[in-house]
Length: 439
Ligand code: NAP
Ligand code: HSE
Image (cartoon, rainbow, N blue to C red):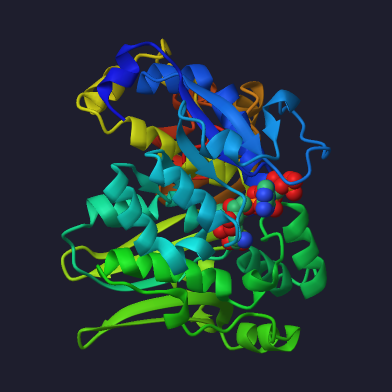
C-alpha cells in the first residue's frame, strides 16, 4: 500500500472471510467508525464482500448484498487490496490466504491455529509477493502484545513470557472460584458471550493457549516455535475441589502459558497452575488476558486487557488494517495532527469519589454541620471516621462519586466553619462509583 492510494481519493476495498462473532464486529467497526478512521488515517475503507457458509443466517446490521458464498468474489477480485480472515480453521483457510497473497493482496488474520502451524510459510509468501501479513488479534484479542514485541521491545532480549492467554478458560476459572457457576454453566456462558471458539475443545484443553504461546514466543525469541512444540494441558480435568483447596492455601488457579529461554533453547508450555494470591497474574479475572514480559533491561512489563469477544477482537483486526495502510511516509505526523474538534472539559465537570480529612474542634454538632454541607452539595457520604480528642480531633469522610465542582463548593463552605481548623485535605478515590471517577 502506498501513499498514492490515499492521494487518489478512492476507497480501500476490504474483503472479509467469515462473518461470525468477530467478522460482524469488524464490519460494524468499519461502518460505525468510518469517519473517525478516515479522519485519523486518511483512508476511506469499504467492505467489498463477506464470505460465509450459510447465507441465510441472521446477521444484524450487515447489508445482505455484501454476503457471498463464493471465495473467488474476494480472493480473485483485483480491487480488493486487503483480505481480513476471521473464519478460523485450517482448511480451506490456508488455501484462501495463499491465493490472496499470491495475487499481492495483504492479509489480516485472527487465526492462531493456522499461524501456529503455517505462519512462517505465509510470511515468506507475503514477502515474496510484496504483501503484508498482520495477525495482532491472533493472540490476546484486544491487547497489542504482538506490536509491542515486534516494535517497542524488539531490542529488549526477552527472557520469559508468562501469560493468561485464553479468555474462555480464565472466565470459567473465575466463575468457578467465585462459586457462582459450575464448569459446564460457565463454559456455556462463555460460548454465549462469544469468547469461546466455535468448537470450545481447544479452549479448555489448552490447545488455543498453546497456539498463542507459539506465536508470541516465535516473535519474542526470534525462533520458529510451532504448536506441536508446545506441550499443553487444559482445565478440563480440574475439579471444583482443587479450586477450593488452592483457595484455602492462598492460591488461585490459572491456565498459564510459560515460555522461557533455557540455555539457548526455547521452552514453551501451557498448564493450569496455582498462582499466589498476591501475584499480579492472580488479579486477572473473567475473559481478560495478561502477558508478563521479562527482560534484563526492561525487567517486567505486564500487558492486560480483553482477551476475547467480538468487538474486542475487531479492534485489533481493524488496527492491523490501518497499520498496513499507515505504513506510508508521513502517516504518524498525519495522525498526530488530526483534530476531531473536541473541546477540553473543565476540571469541575469531571466526576470522582473523594476522601476528605479535617482537623476539627472537639465539640458536639461538628459532624452534623459538615455532613449537611456535603448533603446540600448532593455529595453522599459513604464512610465517616472520627478520631482523636482535643487538638488531635479529626474528621475523615469518604464520599461517593460526584462532580469536582460541587466538591470545591462544599469544601469552600467547610473551610468557613468556625469548628474546622486549618486546611481540609481532599484526595480523589480511584475507581469507586460511577463513570468519570479518578482512574
Ligand atoms: P465464528 O463466530 O464461528 O464465525 C466464523 C465465520 O466464518 C462464520 O461467519 C462462518 O460462516 C464463516 N466460515 C467458517 N468456515 C467457513 C468456510 N469454510 N467457508 C466460508 N465461511 C466460513 O468464529 P469467531 O468467533 O468469529 O472467530 C473467527 C476467528 O477469529 C477464529 O480464527 C478465532 O480463533 C479468531 N478469534 C476469535 C476471538 C473471539 O473472541 N471470538 C478472538 C480472537 C480470535 P457462517 O456464518 O455461515 O457459519
Ligand atoms: N477462544 C479464544 C479465547 C478467543 O477464549 O481466548 C480469543 O482468541
